[in-house]
Length: 229
Ligand code: HEM
Image 1 (spheres, rainbow, N blue to C red):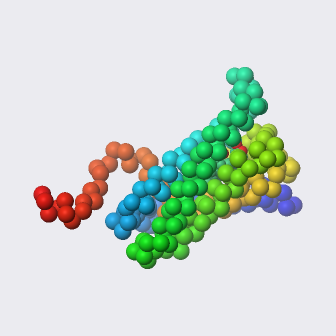
Image 2: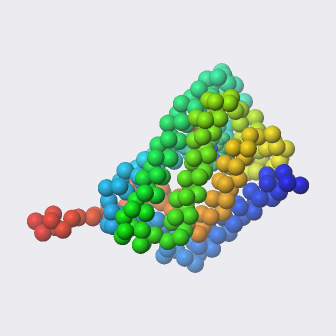
Image 3: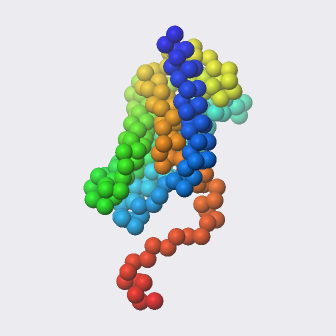
C-alpha cells in the first residue's frame, strides 16, 4: 500500500496539482506570471549566483534526460558500457551538481544578506530556494557521494523505467521498492517541488525560455552614466 501511494498515487497527485495550478494561474494570474527581476536592488551577487545556478540546472536537466528518459538499451546498442556511462555521469553530473549547488547558496545568501532584496522577498521565494537547495544537495550527494563511496547505482534499471512508466500511464511501483533511500527521497521531494511550481516564481520555467533570447533587452543604467548622455 505504501509503495502504491508513494510511487503511483503521490506522483500523479503532484503532477495534477502542477498542471491544474499552472492552467489556473495562466488564466487568472497572468500579470504575475514570471520571475520579476530584483536586479535593480542588487546586481553583482545576483549575476554570480544566477549564472552559476541557471547554467548548472540546464546541464543537470540534460543529464536527467540522458539518464532517466533515454532507455539503457539505447546506450547498450551504441556500445556504451556500464563503466563508461557511470564514469561520465559521475564526472559531468558531479561538476554541474556542484555548480548548481554553489549558485543556490549564493542566491540564498543574497536574499538574506541584502536588506532591500530581503524585504522584497516573499515566503514563496524562500520556500523555492530552500526546496531547490535540499533537492540539489541530495542529487549531488547521490552523484558524487553514493556512486563513489558505496557503488555506482544503476538507476537506468529502476528509476528510469519507473519514471517513463509514470509519463506513459503504465506505472510500476515495484521498480522503486529496492532503490536506495537517498535516491527515493530525491524523487519524492522533486514531485513535491513540481506541485509547488504554480505557486512560485518557478512558473517562468514553462514560458520564459521561448521568447527570452529574442526580446528587447531591458536597460538598467547607473545614474552617473545617465547624466553623461
Ligand atoms: C522525479 C524527477 C527526478 C528524478 C527521477 C531524478 C533522478 C536523479 C538521479 C537518478 C540522479 C543521480 C544521477 C547519477 O548518479 O548519475 C539525480 C541527480 C541530480 N538531480 Fe535529480 N531527479 C529528479 C528531479 C530533480 C529536480 C527537480 C532537480 C533540481 C531542481 C534535480 C537535481 C539533481 C541534481 C543537481 C543532481 C546531481 C547532478 C546530476 O547528476 O545530474 N533532480 N537525479
